[in-house]
Image 1 (tube, rainbow, N blue to C red):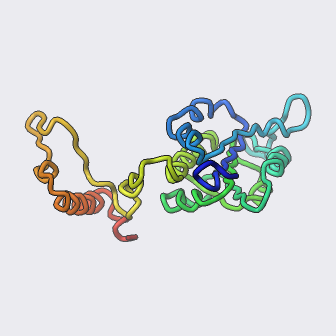
Image 2: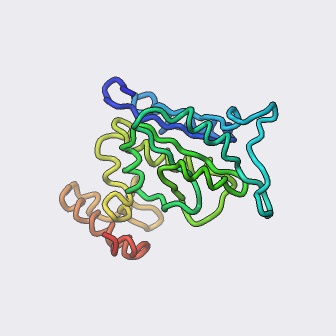
Amino acid sequence: MHGEGFGIVMKISILTIAPEEFDGFLSSHVVKRAVDVGALHIEIVDVRDFADGSFRHVDEKPYGGGGGMILRCEPVLRCLEAVRKGDGALSVALTPRGEVFTQNVAKELAGVEHLILVCGHFEGMDERIYHHMDREISIGDYIMTGGELPAQVIVNAVIRLLPGVLRAGRAEEESFENGLLEYPQYTKPAEYNGEKVPDVLLSGDHEAVRRWREEAARELTRDRRPGLLRKR
């Protein structure tokens, strides 16, 4: 897809059995901004529309027994086939067993022409669904009721990296972009209940401010997330 002023427009398709969970998300500032500047086309696709029968049955008990229900492969794969067109599509299953989502993964996904996110639900998905996925991604080591919130996390992180969504240079200064947490920030008043803003930030010396921020980011990362420094 091509958008005015931005060349290729990123398309994101979210496959879900709970499309209503995205109503507020689609009207959020960052999504509306990405759409309005012509950097993004996003669609929410109801997997139930691809299920057989008037009841649009999408789940079933697992073979071999066990608690809970499993998302059936037929409606999900029919939906995927209908949505995935062309060579530029990348399908991603949102699952606890996937690779952990990081800022570097967000950058990779931001370069995809058509990103398809498949939201799991119930106690899991039929294993055959994963055979048709290009990647599997997890947003962390905890369990949620479905993949809808993880999809929103991923979309938010990805579309912030698209051209024109944030002001120039904004993303480069944020946490994880340089392998560090973001430096501490302050605003008015310069003093509150005896706590003062560091003098260097009030000095007007841009080079001194830059050096202070770099060292403060290192110290904060060393204190809170030392593993990031080792990776860096």
